[in-house]
Length: 342
Ligand code: TXA
Ligand code: MG
Image (cartoon, rainbow, N blue to C red; front, top):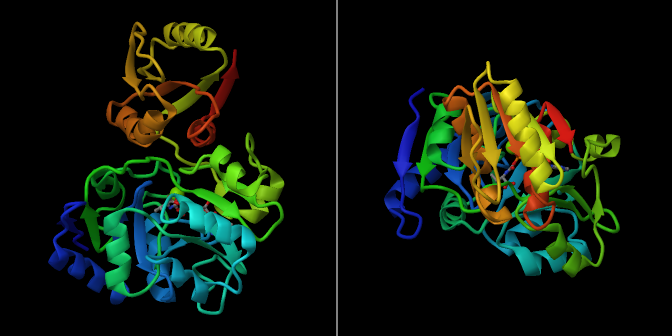
C-alpha cells in the first residue's frame, strides 16, 4: 500500500488534512500520529479488525496490550468499570500528559486491544494534533509506539516511515516530539499503585501525589512484571548495533569507555555521551544532552543515528536515575546486550 504523508503544523493545523486522517481511522485504517512522548500508530480502539492491523504492521506479539488514547477526561468513564480514587488524583494532576493508567476494563473495550486482559491502559495525550485527531475521529484511539516491534520508538515522522512505510495507511508529520520517551505506566488497581514502566512523568512527581508508589522491575524484568505488563518483558528499543552500557562514577565510566573503544578499534565504534561532550579516539561520539530532559528527548533518535552510521558497537554512558533519568536508564538497560559497572 502507499502510505500517505500529511504534513500538519503543530500549532496551526490544516483541519482539512486532519479530517482526512480521521476519516481513515473511522473507516478502520491505521494512521501514525505525534504525541508529546513518541509517535503512535493509531486505530479505532473499539474496532477489533482495525486494532488487528496494528499488531500486523508492527509485527507485535498479540499478548502485548495497547494503550487507549482519549481526548477528554470524561471519555474515560465508558472504557472502565470504575475509576479508583488513586486514578482520580493522578488524572487531576497529570492529564493531559505522559501518564498511562491501568484500570479494570468495561465491555466497550474489545479483548484484542487489551491482549486478553481484564484491564485497559488509558492515556490522554497533551499534543494538540493527537487531541484533535481523537476528537475528529469520534472514537478512542488505540496506539502503541509507531516502530517495528523491538526497535527504538519513533520521535519523528521519518523514523515511522523507515519502519512502517508501505505497511500503514498514513503518517501525520508534525515535527519532533518533545519528551522523547514514552509515558509512565501506573497500575491503579493495586494499593499502593505500581509503576510498571517509568516514563515522561517522573517517579518523584508520582510519589508527591500518591505518597508511595511500588516500583516493579526497576532494574530487571521481574517475573511479576512479566505477568502484569506483558510488553515490558520483551527485549526492546534495540538498535542494530550491540549496545554496551557503562554505569558508575562519571570519570571512571569515561575511562572505561576509552579503554573499550581502544580494545574494539577493529570494529566501528560509537559512543553515546551524556552531560558533557568528550572525544574518544577512533570512535564516533554523539552527544545526548546536558540534562536528563535533553537526553530523554534525543535518546531514541541517536540510537537510530548510530545504525545509519553503520556503527557495530555502541558504548553508552549511564545517567543518574532521577527525574527523566529513570526512564532513560530503563530504556538503555533494555536495549543493552551488556551492562558494565565501574
Ligand atoms: O507514550 C506512550 O505511552 C506511547 C504513545 C504513542 O502514547 N505509547 C506506547 O505504547 O509507548 P506501547 O504499546 O509501545 O507501550 C505500552 C505499554 C506496554 O509496556 C504494555 O505492556 C503496557 O503499556 N500495557 C498496556 N496495556 C496494559 C495493561 N492492561 N496492563 C498492563 N500493562 C499494559
Ligand atoms: Mg513501544
